[in-house]
Picture 1: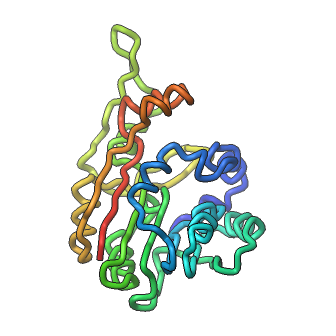
Picture 2: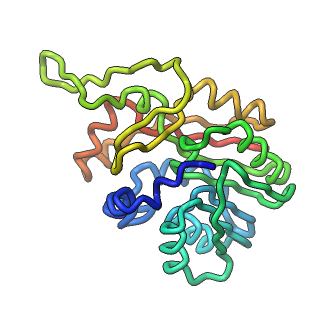
Picture 3: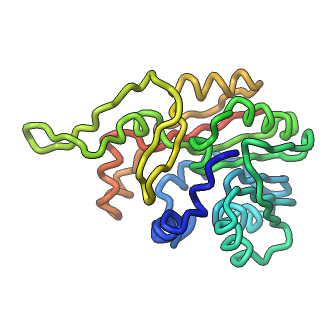
Length: 242
């Protein structure tokens, strides 16, 4: 079973203070780039893998999706999602993404935001998603960038000019890595970029877009704290087609 760190009270409390938790999609700096990768949801059957508070589910419904299913392993996340959603097009269910059993060709679009780096059997999940999509169906997701995950040291170094240096540690060594982000003992699965993309190809997907996300100049001007994200990629955005 996938680690359910989001039901840890300390983690959930910390997560609830993040801008993406308070402001929703508008608080996620990568959302404009992700949105540009998405097909129009009108009349589509959509599944959100790791739906959290349900921000994307509600957005898809507002855009005219025919059906939206939000899945998450966290009871606390789902409670918040259900309480914030009134559109009958959207339904939520508790699910361990490691143990999904999708019906064949049940969805037109699969979406996932910052969830897949918790999945140990990513190959198996990609295969299940591929089977759950109709021919031509789309998978769009964001994942913690492998370079960022491999540079999560207790502290960064600086050069002679005082600029931050983010040392990459054992990038080629794949497997679980434990961090203390918001709570102690958060387990994430490190994979190289090549492994992630090749798992998609092996599952039968055609990759249509890959982006080492970084903030635009306008975003940095509006939110100066984002300047740090230009020093090393934090997020990897991927779009693929069945």
